[in-house]
Amino acid sequence: MLATWHKPAQAAPELVLRERIDIHLEPIRRVDSTIVVKGRLLQRGDGDGASYISMRLRFDERWVTILSDGDGYFSQRFVGSEGEHILSVDVEESLHFDAAHLEMADFDVEKRPLELQLSAPSTLADTESELDLMIHVSSEGQPLSLALEIFLGSTGGPLHRVASAQTNHQGEALVKIAQEQLGKAGRKRVELRFAGDESFDAATASSLFQITSSATVKLEAGGSEFDYGDTIPVSGRLEDGRGEAIKDAVISLEVQGQRIASAKTDEWGDFRIPIDSEELGSGTSIAVQAVYRPIEDWKAAAHSPPITITIGQRKPFPLSLALAAFVVTGLGLVTFVGLRTRPWERFRASSAVGRDEEVVAEDAPEIPPVTGLSAGRPKLSRTFRKAHFMDFEGTVRDAVTKECIGFARVEVEGPSSQVLNTNVLGSFRTSALYEGEHLIRISADGYVSEQCRVTTPHRGEFHSTTINMLPVREKIFSLYKDALRPRLPDPKLWGIWTPRQILDHIKSSHPNASLTALTDFVEESFFSQRNPHEDVLPSARELIRAFQKEDRPRVPRP
Image 1 (cartoon, rainbow, N blue to C red):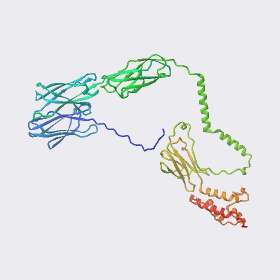
Image 2 (image 1 turned 180 degrees about the horizontal axis):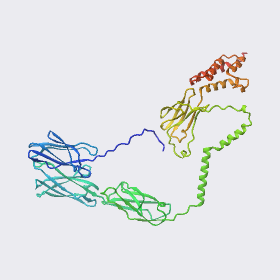
Image 3 (image 1 turned 60 degrees about the horizontal axis):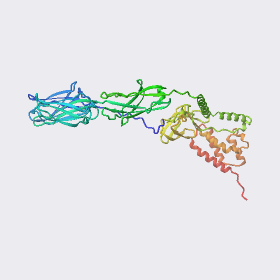
Image 4 (image 1 turned 45 degrees about the vertical axis):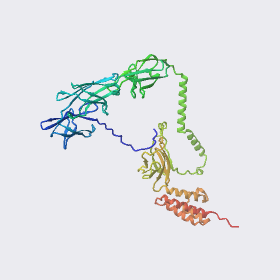
């Protein structure tokens, strides 16, 4: 896979899920000179008690910290007088629970305690038209006739008002909630609320239930007979018991209980699953069935009636086409290997060697040392992949002696910028580079600097590279040879005569003061123990230009 931009690895985001808590207070009673506050912490998701949760209770200006018990219940006594008071309960946010707060301002302990009871069925099918709620209200064992409000919503979500109720003289009321007010299938919470009046404090009661979802799966295949190798277009629709679409549900296609394919329904409850007939095999009366298996316990599983498909017999593949495929593959492989190995170049080189044997050895041209970057050849397996390598790696060595150059400086410029040194063996490897073209500069003491361009990503050609660097003294002597060798009486004398002998020969025919300075410079740079720096190269070129300018033959004036 091609990397479009190199970025440092980042830590995955941390997802923390906390359960919401509801605080329910029982009727507050006065016992002798104390006020008894009792209640329960309930997990909104499943209605179970939140056990061993720390909370702070405030009664007027007094604060206490207590824990709920194993079932979420709590109890605390406060010393209080008659009249109105302020009571609040606070649960701080923790690793598993959200914060919660309940406050009762200006409640009067002298008011009669009110008890609300709410009964609802634990399960309701989505095909049923309404929900029946039984309500009972009493105070100190005596039934009461009161006006109440009913709120409903999904567990873990907000509640909204759906109805009101008025209990009779026996403190009872039957309330029916219509289907359109219940919402979609799932876990639900219904709450009964009394706002409070002059005689009674506010009170609440709640109950949990779930609306189970039934489902219907329809399936069709766009035909019943197909040839072997055809693609069978299977489609269908998933609906709940109310005829509404069920979206984002997983539908599996099964043959004799074995799943062969699956897909998700769209926002309209439709799904499409193309099947390769080769997976089913040839034959008649192949029964295919769509199955819906939800993971939620309030959703019911469903399956479609099976449809029968007939697939024709498999036709044999023509032998001629098989042979042709092998031939084409073989030709392609031979061509690829030939382009990789280039055998004609070895043949051309061997032919050139045969011809060179006929040439006198001393007439053969001198081959200068090869400098610069020699790219590596990627492995055969890498050439079949997309370019995905993002680093540059190689070895720096002397172009003349082929010895490795340790502690050479490698600078990378471009989309990425890096500076590193080779190890004692002359090897180096950059870290991952950004995508694009980079300029690589290589420098070392006593050597002529080299530079090359590297493009990332690559297929491995910039791994195992070799960078040959020419010593500065060899460069100086090469410039000196190019300028002085043509002035010898016989080119074969080069390498036999010393620079001083060359100087004496040229001065005998034509005095040249610049040549003396050039000879001193070459002897100092090439033959001394000190390793010259490449900063002296401009001086060498300047001395050679001065020699060549003074060595030009003078044309006599007419």
